[in-house]
Amino acid sequence: MSASLFAVFGLGPPEILLLLVLGVLLFGRKLPDIGRSLGKTVVEVKKGLKGIEDEVSEPGAQRAAIEPEPIKAPTRVTPSNTPKFDDSPAPASVPPKL
Image (cartoon, rainbow, N blue to C red):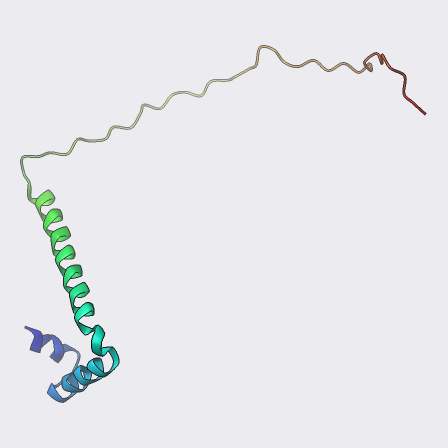
C-alpha cells in the first residue's frame, strides 16, 4: 500500500532513502516526538471518522426535524406616551452671573 502511494508521487527507492536521510539530519532527536504526535493525530482522526460513520449508519435513530417558527404578520408599534416638546424656556431661578 505504501509503495503504491510513493509511486503516485513518482518516488523510487533512491528518492525515499534520500528523504529519510534528510529527515534524520534535520529532525534528529525530535523524530520520536514527531512520530508520536503524528500517531496520536491519526488515531484521533480515525475515532472521529468512526463516530461519523456510526451516526450515518444508525437506521433506528431518526433525527428530529427542526421546525421553524411560524411567520407572524408585522405589527405596528406606536408609543402611547410620545414626548412633548415645549418651545418656551424653563423659568430660571438663578440669574446668570456676568
